[in-house]
Length: 257
Image 1 (cartoon, rainbow, N blue to C red):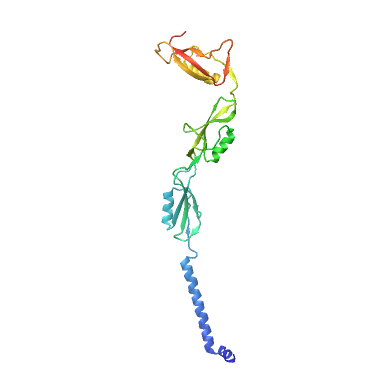
Image 2: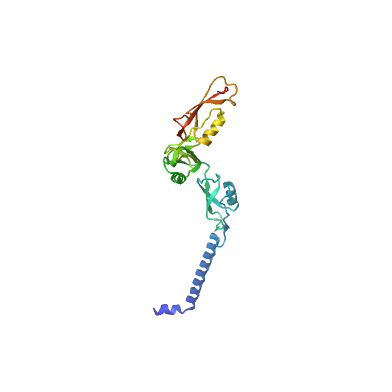
């Protein structure tokens, strides 16, 4: 032990200690700056804003900066196909070169959804259900029925829809609703002497009735000037009213009676 303490006081020990300290310091210095160079500490690229751009425009910007990219796709209604709708990292984020940027773009085709059951449901409830399934409300028309604002018929592209039928997400659904006037009655109009077009106007706009069967009597020389010579039902002393929506059959002739 005395010899070891004596050695610590020698010039040789001090020289070796100083050399060891310098060696460790040099190693740490080299390691620190090598790591900074390898990781490019303090250096980075500013991620461009890509949301809303077409996919081809977005990748052109990324490739020009030396950034890689990966793509995922989802369907978003009313978004043009191939549009960037999300990016990670966000715009104006500093990243290393060769970093991967993750893009989400809108799909070209809409996925199918099963049509929900909205039959006989109130309009407001049916609209909420339609929208919750990613569908849109199309045209809404009314039909004579005792129920008011209740779904009577559903169609897509002119074809009736059934519950569970697959249709593209975002499709517009047309509804026929009840007008709540199914039990009301209106006066039977007199159509004798009117042309077909005049009768249609009187039935639909005045009496809220429908045109039924159309027949012709005698030789028809000019269909546009033919007038109604018979109608069914016809107002009599005993029958003067019918329910809204009742069809009225007419007979046309070029010979007025």
